[in-house]
Amino acid sequence: MAVTERINSRLQLVFENGTDPVSGDQIYKTKSFNNVKMDATADQLFAITEALAPLQQLTLYSIERDDTELITAE
Image 1 (cartoon, rainbow, N blue to C red):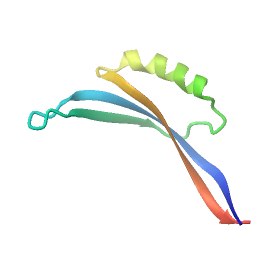
Image 2: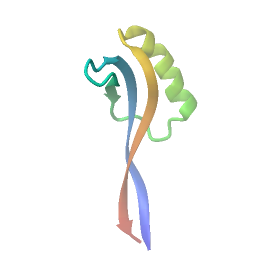
Image 3: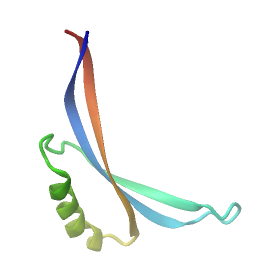
């Protein structure tokens, strides 16, 4: 049986960065913050994002959390 262990967590803020002139599709830019505490809650990450977003020049589109897990045999 396989076992997973979370080994890394990253906060990603996705910003709107204009539109593609040819296709008209939205262009996005991502800013990542590595080494997020693995026990950080969604509310805590949201609060951090509320503090950081006004400091950016682009409009915030979404907030993402990217976790990396190590899969090993039990």
